[in-house]
Length: 372
Image (cartoon, rainbow, N blue to C red):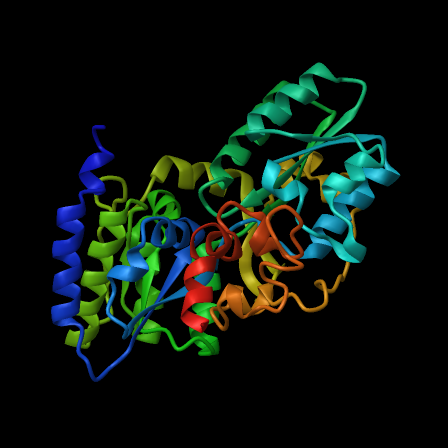
């Protein structure tokens, strides 16, 4: 299969792994955070962990848009549906994420709420066009990858003067979260596998300040197994050389400056949100976006007077620590017992990009064997 098989060649993977084992110094540890959940799944799905020497360890980061959304934002959406005659549209993964008091969007739908799963912001717009008698709210989440499509839909709705459509904006930004984790110093990170899809939008240069300030190297890595293994080798070499710069392994999709058209679109519709709460990371300044005043008529938070809701995570769930790189999923008492993909207690088990889901799908037997 063109452009897939080339990045899954077992012989090349073994060659790259041998180079890593040769170049990784035995007297030091290499703690590498994969910021994006797509990398976490690639690492486990393709057995990349087994190719690494013992002193090269992967630390899982917060790069899953569903995982980093605090329960209070989901509760606010549920309250919106149940107190107003609206149709709420959102992505499938978000439906099962636990909110407060063991609630979720899926349970709110079962109680009669008109909550619909969509594949894109455009789908939500189409539902609004087909239901002019109802208010339709798109529950928008995601990093810089999904922000431009939401911006495009808001521009279209504005041009159409569509009065029954609005967006509950929860789009967040990658570099501020990355800098927060490094500044906290909890996870003791030696290098970062940078997110690839996000980087196609913001470009490799967006991480330069992060590397300079915290002296941590970053390699933007693709999602195929050879992408990840090669990126690990690039990080090991930087760490050995005492360097801390941004390198781009994913050159087939990421440029230095990123997608200027998408950036311009985002800047036209969104502005920096002064404060935003992240699950696990707390309230971070200028780490998310909000809808500009020019598009305020389409801002669901303003249209419906939505208020922030403080909600605690489910007792025993260590998702917040997993998102900060402090713990592995199998260190949670609920993992694989009370918390499974069929009955998730934490966001990291729900999402297809969550670290707990990756461990459960590909790594739980390995973890059990290592403990035996």
